[in-house]
Length: 241
Image (cartoon, rainbow, N blue to C red; front, side, top):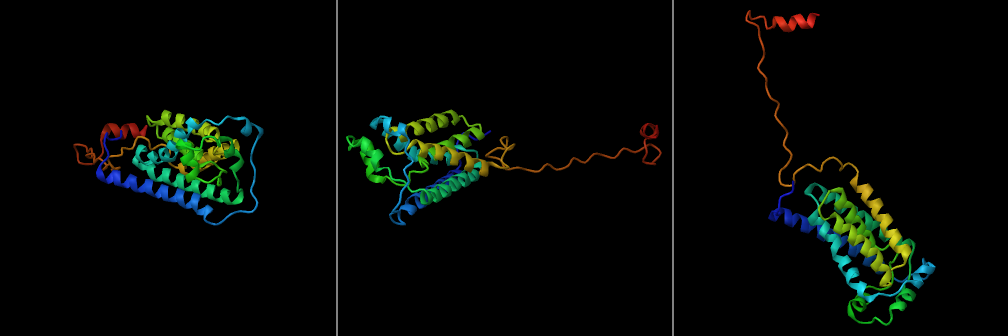
């Protein structure tokens, strides 16, 4: 069972892991943008992408999706925190590779929300240029969070599943991503989870607060016969049958 409160050491350890994850995200996402403009960009749009409405109110869900995945460092059992971080790093690295291999431009998609120049959606668009869309890291991180909390049997797992579903909807209805971006993000999350989860099964019963301790073997007294021979007649007789 997990302890109700985290010790100062445990809290600082988890905060450090969350900081590493945030640094990895910034390096992979914005680092690719720093490499300079790409002449040829891929258009992954499907007909349904243009028919979906723009719903500026979903920008709040989209914005929460930036911070929600970092809660994973504080909600997982201690023995899974590093594996969760490893999956986060793997997902970020794979996304960075795809950003370079499949550069996209969402300017035309965002034009469908041109009327929503203010509020949360306007702020999001000013902070985040319409590049590095494939895959959607909002969806990828949210799905990864849901997979790990389900793996750990956390009471937060259903909230995580709901958040993942909401992110899939929000990235499309705020016109920040194409449907293909959302699908790619979910697929990469599953791959990263599977790679990092290998070997972690069967340890759910290990306590966060208590380290594993090996049990000392119990010494049993030797059974000797009354004549000092070290053999018990009844046991010898059964053995010789």
